[in-house]
Length: 152
Image (cartoon, rainbow, N blue to C red; front, top):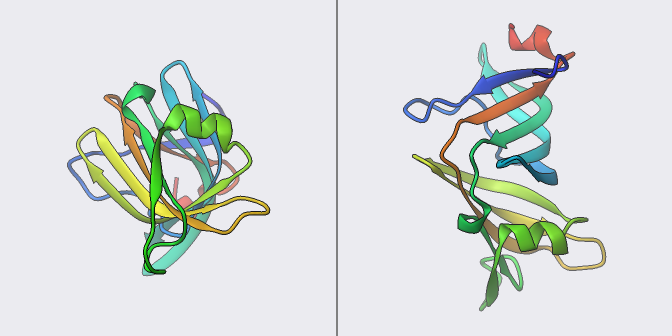
């Protein structure tokens, strides 16, 4: 276990621990069947106050062949739109310098859905929807140095 990270396993039968609404995925990594999303911010509501952290969300036993990304030609709600569906693996290769801002998040059993905006230098911001499937734990990993405000 990395000594610089506090890990919180998401209980799929309980409320989510952190909110990712407004978080930007800065990097996607896939290694040993684990998908890792490095985020600029994770949000947690503690003692009637919203607190911000930096860290990652890790999806263990992830099957990339069952994960995909819908990328639209504009932001939704801006008139008629079209889009493409690509595998998450292809997305990570083709759009490695992009950022994905999560606007809504949905969790159901082994399926996670994030919708939001795809930001790429030199291109207009467009809407996108990410589908993730994994059979293992989903972990929120908060970088150490923030444990005093986590109450850990």
